[in-house]
Amino acid sequence: MSLESFFGLDTQGGAPGSSESREAFQEMMRESAKAAAAIGAHQAAQKKQEDKLAKILMHYFKDAKKSDIVFLVIKLLQENVPGAFILAVLSISDTEMEHELSKDFDEGNVEESALASFAGEAFIPDSIKKTINAWGDAILKAGLLLPGKTLQGVLTPDQKLKSLVLDLLQFSLEEYFHRHGLAFSEDKIREVALLSIQTVLVKLRAANQEKSDIELIETPLTE
Image (cartoon, rainbow, N blue to C red; front, top):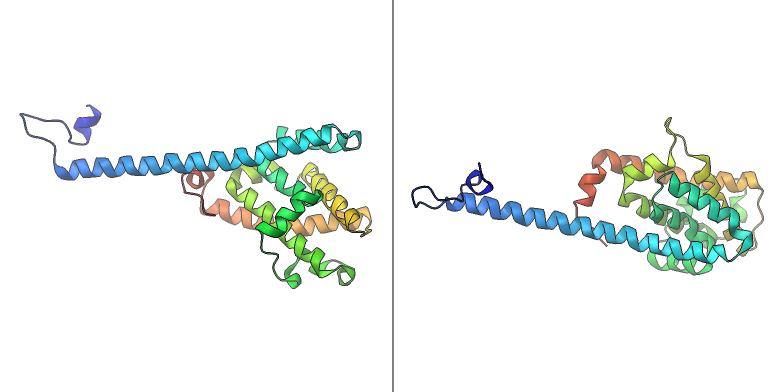
């Protein structure tokens, strides 16, 4: 059976296919075109973030002090952690990217900050708490591009956060706190990192249960 005859578009004895069949076929083609466009948009969004990450890595390559973080990022990429997610985690470590955070994300209520339950949080300025909020939103947005792949990349088979991911979160926070004159122990910084990523993982799991990655990439992106 040909594609045309399947949809009733061929002629049998000179009689054309029904208008209903033609309309059904045309509607199917329109939906296919929308899906293709959506897939292209998702791929473009991923590539844009991956290009930014590549530029940052090239910058780090020139700094001998950043060799460890370059190696860490490469390891994460080998673990199939999406480049967009890695970039979002790194965003708070860089002055220029931190400025983009404040422009692109709602900094929210400081009482809902990941630092709200952090011992000593009363001594942390509200501006810092707001940036941590925006950072968490940036990580979530990046993960939501492909929640299934992101979860598979950042979690171990028994659903625990990979130590490599925690190391990247810790590095980014250390750079951020140092730049703003805040001194915390390594254990405290890791605590903030875990508090920050916990909500993100919960929301990524919920999104992954609602729609698979395949379904998501066939859905038009929203700004």
